[in-house]
Image (cartoon, rainbow, N blue to C red):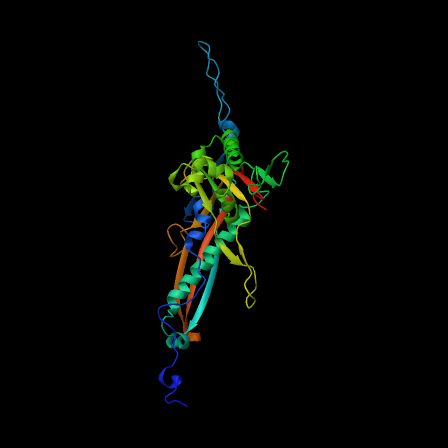
Amino acid sequence: MAQPSISDIHVDRPLTNISVAYMQSSTNFVADKVFPSVPVSHRSDRYYTYDKNMFFRSEAELRAPGTESSGSGWTVDNTPTYFCDVLAVHRDVDDQTLANAEAPLNIGRETTQWLTHQLLLKRDLDFVSTYFTTGVWGRDKAGVAAAPTGTQYVRWDVAGSTPIEDVTAECIYLAEQTGTDPRDYVLTITPYVYDALRNHADILDRIKYTQRGIVTTDLMAALFGVKAVNVAWATNSTSAEGVAASMEFVFPKAALLTYSPSSPSLMTPSAGYIFTWTGFLGSGAQTGTRIRNFRLDERSGNRYEAEMSYDMKVVSSDCAVYFDAAVA
C-alpha cells in the first residue's frame, strides 16, 4: 500500500466559496407591489369612507331668478377600522454553536436572511387569503373550457380565448362603476397564467413587430391598458418539518384586476390598503418590520427575532375584479 495515503495528506473541509440554500429573491413576493401601504402610528384606528352614490349623482338644477339654489350633500361613514396584528418568528443560537461555526457559515447573516424570508412569505400567504380569492370583490369571473355564460370567460390557456378583450372589458366595467382611471389599474397574475399569456396567439400577434417580439410584463400592461402587470413568483412547501418538501406556488392559477393608486391619500378609493404599524418601537418606516438580536444569558446564547405588523383590508370591494381559474 502506497504511503502516505490520500487521507493522510488531506482532510476534507467545507468549501468557502459555495454553499447551497434555497432562498427566494425578494422580487418573488408581490404583497407590497399591488396595494399602497398606509404607515400608521397606532396599532388600531378608524378611517372615513364617503357614500359613492352621493358623489356620482348630480343634484344641480335650473335656478329661476330670485330663488334658492338646489341644496344637497353627502354622508360619511367612520365605522371602518383597522387593527395591525404582530407576526413574529425567532431563532436561538447558542455560544458553542456560534464559536464552532466555520467559514463559509455566517450564522448571524444567514439567520437574518431566513427570518426576513419567513415574514415575506407569510405576508404573501396572507395576501392570498385576504384578496386573491373568490367572494371578496364585487365581481368574480369564472374561467371555463368553452361556452361561457353570464360572468364566465374562456380560460386563457384554451385556443380561441380572448384575454386582451376579457381584461379590457373589465377595465371599462370598473371605470363605469367607480369612476376610477384605468391607468391606475394593476393586474396581478401567477406564473402559470403568465406563461399562458406570453404564449397566447392574440398577444404574440399584437407584439410581433415590437422590439424582438418578446412578451414582457410592460408590454402586457400596455396591451391591457393598465399601469402594471405583476407576476407572483413566490413558492412554498406545504409539508411539515422533517418531511420531504412538497412545493407549490403561493398564488392560485388566477388573476386579480385592481384599482391601485400609487400612494394613499385623502378622498381616494383603493381596492385595498395594507396598514403597517410603523409606530411599533424600532419598526421600519414602510413595512412595519423590525429585526432584533439580543442576549439570552440563561441559555448562553443569542436570540435573533423578526417582527412584522400589518392589517390587510379590503377598502373598496367594487374596485377589483377576480378572474378565477384563469388557466387549468
